[in-house]
Length: 257
Image (cartoon, rainbow, N blue to C red; front, top):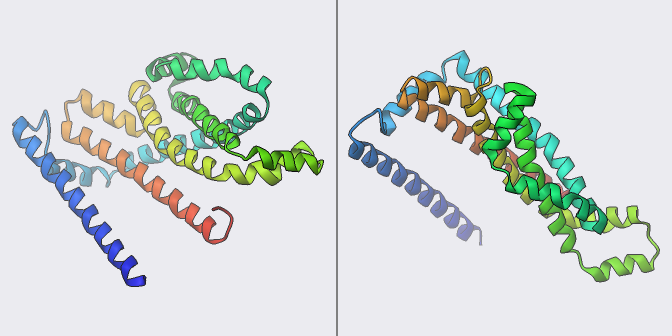
């Protein structure tokens, strides 16, 4: 069994490496087909620009500011989304009250949200507000789905034992919601990175990944634009990996399933 798991892990790493290699080859072929570094630079010029970029103070300040906005967006939207989802899932009146809000958020284009928020909040707070507005309904929807998945017979059983609503929530609903909340958190983190950087590109706060992209594009520095994009992808992947490690540690301690 152990040998089988090891072989499976080795094969997974091998195919992962082959996948990355294939992407790099396709990237190089597309760059050569374009025939211009201005239109589509290859991996080598982008890597060289990236290597030069990561040695600058500007890069690390930009990365830190964008990372802070992502974390702040998550810290605000996830708890509020969970609370709204619990209220909507357990009370039809709360669901009816919040339904128009969810409908408006879902139908509003992200760019419109960014532009309107920029008028009120300025360039520094707009990415965080936009991230909140996009992540909040995702977490609420996941929480509502989790509540809907609870076996009604268990609810009736707890009612028969005359447990209060708070006790029912803590003993039944919260443990059942954990997988749905964690799944929503994973989705929300990647969404948050996309929304925050998109807002930064548009409103250009001081020192951010999105601002670096916009400035590189304005100066026709396409390799640098690709380098800033690669930095964003790597930062998002790193944050996802850190979240996975944290959740794995909780699972080993028996705190999650």
